Each structure stands twice: as C-alpha cells, then as structure tokens.
Length: 371
Image 1: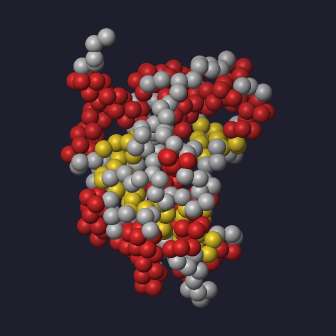
Image 2: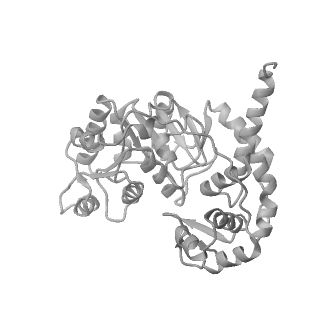
Image 3: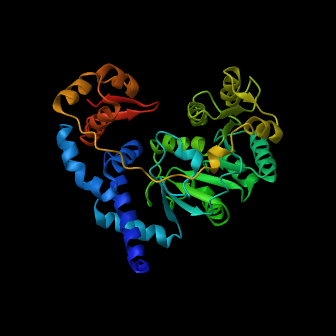
C-alpha cells in the first residue's frame, strides 16, 4: 500500500482544524455540546451538517454555522501571531484541564506547554492588593518555580502580576480576551514576555476584547489547569473566591494565606480557611499539600473522541424528558432516573434542545429550559 501524500495529509488536517473551529464558534455549541456532537457524529463536518435536523427535533430555530470566511481569517491571524490552536483530544491539551466537564473545546496558545508531570499551582488574589501581599505572592511564586513547579494565574493587576513576575519562565498566564489583546494595558510587556518565555493561553477568539462575562470562564481554566489553587489576598465577593470555589468543585486543593481581620482584603482568605481551605505560610506548605496528587492523572495520554452508537429519541421519550425540565436547574442524572429512558437517549434529547436554543447548561452537570 502506497504511503499517503504528505500534502494531502496536511490539507486534510487543515480542513479538520477549520471544521472544528467552525463548529466551536457556532452559536449554541458549548464545550459539552461540542464533545457530544463529535462522539455522536465522528467528525466536526458531519456534526455541522446535522445541526439543522437536531434543531428541528429540538423544536427551535436552526443554528447557522460560523461563516467559513471568519474561521479562515482566525486561522490566518493565529498563524501570524506565532500562536496555535489546541483542541480537546489533542495530545498537547492539558490533561488536568481535560477532566473538567466544561473544559474549553479549543485553546489558543503562544509559547511552550509545560511538562504535565510538573506540579502546577494557581496563585490568585486581589487586584488592589497590599504591597505586603504582592511581595509575598512574588516570593512564593519564585520559591515554587525553584522547586520545579509551574505557577498559573490570570495576568490581572495585583497578586496575579506579582505571581507571574516571581515565577519567571515557569508560569502560565490565562487571559480573558483574545490572544492578541493585552489587558490590563500596563501588563502588555509582561504578557509579551510570558508568550516568548513561558505560556500564554486564551479561550476567546483573536481580537476579542475582555468583558466581565469572560472572566468566570477564564477562572475555570486557571482552576482546572492546576493541582491546587491558592488565594493570597481577596475580598469576600472577589473573583478570586470564584476561582477557589471552582477548584474545590473540580476536586483540587484550595489553599489560602491568612491576613489581619482588620483588613477587608484579607477577609476572603480568612473565610476560606474557616471553611476548610489549607492555611499556607510558605512554598513547602503548598508542595506538601499537592504532592499526594496521583501523578498518573497528568501523565496519561488524552485519547481522541470515540464515536458512540446512535441513540436517537422517539417523540414519546422526547416529551417525557422535556416534561421533567423547567426554569430551575436540574441534575442530568436526576432526569435520567425519573424519565426511565436510557442515558444515551436522554443526552440526545438534551443535545437537540441545546442546539435548538431551548436548553441552558449549568455547573455541576445541571440543565434548565430557557424561557
């Protein structure tokens, strides 16, 4: 049998990248839906072709797939930036992040992927952090990097910036906008340095200006990438506590640095410790906390999506599943239990409803009807 033509192989790979991006950038196709579509139809192109029928079955409007010309421009822009896309199922995709139920379908990255076997610690905290907290975060990140750990943070002002600076090249910066957008502006030079010496990561398409709704998505990547999340300084309702909560929900260690009860910026950390977070005083405390993590989790290769047998629902099953849903988020497992319908069929009905714009997915494997 003759070897495959390298040019044909390259062209097929490029087409597959474009198809995957087109599916991911289609309105209504989130990370969970993306995985289910690939498992159901095998390829992104087949999934795109199936979208109109899925929307019809779900009783909603037909989703228009992303414009191929827009995808072509995105691919070209990413290449010009010396960046690349990493998809779920690729071997470079971070193994710990891949275990999240809502792991990003695609990441845009610049720089070098760190060794997945190295311990990784997320360091987050207040943007308006005190000078003492910034100094502590910078020194702690430096000490962790000296011990072979990777420091993950969000490139925000304050604690995030201090952590990245302290870790040097042993850092991962996850940003809320596109890979080409520097935010905050004063961190433009630091962002470029991280892209050149470490790793810069974005979930949003190139050119996307960060908005408030993007930051919780970024926070889940920070929490999901690391073995544990440490909060250095944070107010009770800060985004850093969202990151800590997401880390706890993912089964990762949550750590915090205690502070004075007289300082409002320390109240969030003190509350975390009161609720069970590990009190941290130095780098050794952090490493001792995360070392029990089973290294096989991060060394196991990420396998491609396996195509599942068709599990189409009939009208009776569809009506039964829809009747159990409402505006209040309900666990999918509970829907399966009460419907008496096979799990694969329930998942197919939920997929149809989501493509039709009638279903919203929530954290913790819960779903609700829209409107």
